[in-house]
Length: 390
Image 1 (spheres, rainbow, N blue to C red):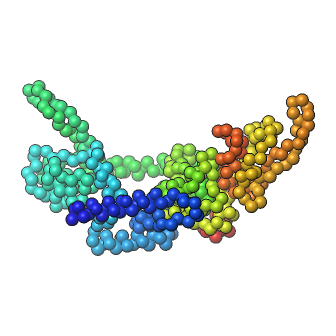
Image 2 (image 1 turned 135 degrees about the vertical axis):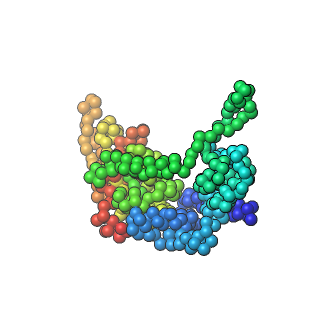
């Protein structure tokens, strides 16, 4: 049975990896496989979404199947099907934290009766470390206090006679009390997550450009589970994980960095793969109405403004049906005083959707003369009601 269980875990792990790879776009605006099916079956995401947003995505009803199976048969899903369990089981072979049994063990076997993972703790040093859940039950119940968990390193301590023995293991004890204290410390640190000034609703962060279809920031952060699916599927790699720029709360949530990649005008894939509804699935026509930001021209860098050099790149690449970037013919003089006419770009704030292609294609090196900010985004409650996806 043990080998059969490992085979099924391996199969599900391969399926998970296959579906993860399939999130890469093949050129069409539809994904051919249920790439987020494993996330849909996750009861934890169901619960977190329910408590944070008081709403549940229909796809999460699949997770009810896992709940029913668990009520009937126990934790069989983790042992036979959660691809994560198979992966972590392999990695646990190299864990620094490990279990040791002293010579005081009498082989009474009581530890095996409380083992939640079937790791055969009664076999002493031959226990199955890949199956251990580190629940510390064997440590708590051992009548001889022979079981301990700790961070081990190989040393050669001296005996009483001063003669070195062979390599032995020394451990720093890590009991259940220390684990609970660590957990409580983490909970008390939660308020520090919102210490960034950008966590205040009245302060706007112009660099936080969210994917099209994203909910208002407060609701977006409630639903986003930082799974990375939207970043994986982005065909230009423009969606990147947020770091510390906007506070700890937004870490690893997706934001658009136009210098890396723009938001493709005819792509709606990020909304298709989002498991929680933090990014709503939009039709192409709906997406065309969504503003994720606004392009701004820096006249100190723009070639037609700063150097009287003709350049029409931003207007050429603008994807909107009626160009959001247009030209104004202005007369300028060169160094010798000769007057001539040059086209200088302007941005129509009503038409610009903030896709960022102008910034990505701007020929002015690493510091583009046109850039996108999240100012003017259509993520307000009112705009989302108008778009019909709040």
